[in-house]
Amino acid sequence: MFNRYLEINSEVKKAIEKGDPVVALESTIISHGMPYPQNVETAKKVERIIRENGAIPATIGIIKGKLKVGLSEEEIEYMGKAKNVFKVSRRDIPFIIAKQLDGATTVASTMIISALSGIKVFVTGGIGGVHRGAQETFDISADLMELANTNVAVVCAGAKSILDIGLTLEYLETHGVPVIGYKTDEFPAFYTRKSGFRVDYRVDSVNELAEIIKIKWDLKLNGGLVIGNPIPEEYEMDYDIINKVIDDAIIEANKRGIRGKDLTPFLLSKIKQITEGKSLESNIQLVYNNAVVGSKVAVELSKLYKR
Image (cartoon, rainbow, N blue to C red; front, side, top):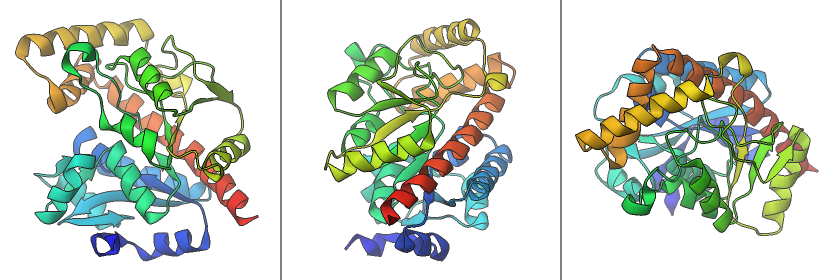
């Protein structure tokens, strides 16, 4: 029944049907995460990296109410330039479809559309989580509930340090979501390789990652996995400096009454401004790094399912 809402491009559809490796990509990073033209250039390069590492990229978005899996270059350009592209999470999907609007998919909605399409691996920058002060605001990203319920493995550079990383990890533990460190014992914090919090398990090979993913779903242990892949050292930002910037930005946001879905874009904008653009370069490089790892995981997972 959902096929009437879903449009998978022919290359991606063929790969899914054959069990070949496919990697899903979100579109929020295109429409809301970076300025034009860096957003479009980054999206296209991520797709190239995925191809170079043996998988087929499937950038996901909503255009005129249609769930698109595998955006064309023209559609990526459109998403990067268009105004009034809504940021779409789980709750928003039916409204955006019904009103035939354009939507950029978050981690949660990209996971949903990936699962509908049969894509098992998704690469993003960082997952959403529990916001600082959530004990008063109850501000918790829908990404976490999606990870608890939807069978997609998410390769990310951890969670942004604008969040309460300790509570984010507690939430994931409560819902049985494995948090894996790829070649790291510590959960990465997006701009930095360290967060002060340990992962559940460290895994040092993509073969083992693929095996863990397959075993989890073979056993009907529904829900996703978080694969924390630290930003490359040469692009890492100073841990103390980035945390001071975030603390100052949060104080300013509180004074100005900025909260809810407006908070994250405000904080990221302030971080970029204060770090003189270095945070944007870090953001781009960690996504490229995740694309390499995600592609290799998808390739190994494809081999296991074809045995």
